[in-house]
Length: 374
Image (cartoon, rainbow, N blue to C red; front, side):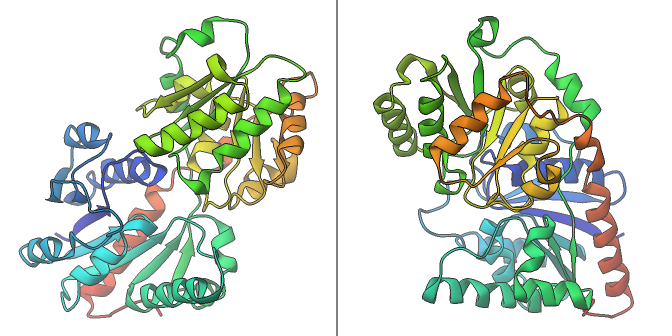
C-alpha cells in the first residue's frame, strides 16, 4: 500500500506544524503515514510523539542557523529504505530539503505546499525566489497553494491554469475549537476587567508585532488595554519586542505568553484578535480566532485575509502600516459597533481531505507510470 510522508523542517510552533499534525492524524486512517521532521527541536515534538502516525526525525539536534538543507542527506538515506508513496512538504521553510533528498528517487513522489507569500523583496533576491518557485513547480507532481492570493504570482498562476497547482485554503474544526476553548482561563488577566488584545504567531518580522505594540499604545490614550502575544521566538526576538513595549508605555500590561497547544483558550477570552502581518498565505490564526467568535482585525497584506473577512463584513481590515489607523480599528472593535465574525469560520472546511485526495491522485498516477499532472 502506498505510504504518505508529511515533511516539516522542525517542530517549532507555527501554523505549518499545526496543519501537519492535523493532516497526519487524518491520513493515518487511510494510508500508512509518517510525519518526517528534518530536525527534532520544537514545542510540538511531544504532541507529535503521542500521535497515531509514525514519527521520523532525521537530525535530533537543532538546525544550523541560516541553513535549511542540513537534513537533506539523512533524509535521502532514509527515504531510500522506505516503501513507495507521496511526500507532502508542508512549508516554504522546508522545501529545499526534500527537493535535494529526492533527486533520482522515483518511488517517492512530491507535493509541495506553498504556505507563505513569495512576492517579497525585489531585485536579485526577488528574482532568485521566483526562480526557486519555478524549480519547485517543475519538480513537483502537484503544487498546493495555501490561499487564493498565491495564485496571483505569475509562475504559480501558470501552474494553476495548467492544473498542476490547486488552491487549498486553511480551515478550522469549529466544534473542536469551541470545545478546546471551554477549559479554564490560561492566564489571570482574563479574570480581570481590563480588555486583552491578542496576537498569535512566531516573533518574526513577517508577523509585524511592533506595529501592534505601537497601535495598542496609541489606543491606550483612550482606554486601558493589555496586549498578549502567543508564540515562540528567540531570546533576542523576545528582548527586542519587550523593549519596544516598555518604551511605548505598556510595561506591566504587555505579555509574551510563549507557545501553547491551545490557542483557542486564549482567543476565546481576548476582547480582540489582531493579525498585523506583512505577508501570509492563508492565516490559520485568523480562522482560529474567528472560530471562537472573537472580533478580529487583519492587515490587507496578510494573504487572503480580505477574502476570509468578506472585505470587512466579518472583521475589520487595515492597511498594515499605520499604527494610528490600527489603533482606531482596535477601539472600534471594542465598542458597540464591533464587526463580529459570526459563523464565517464554518465556511472554510478542514483542508486535510483535500490534501489526502491530492496525494491519492498522485499515487494513482505513480501506479500508472505517469510523472505529474502538467
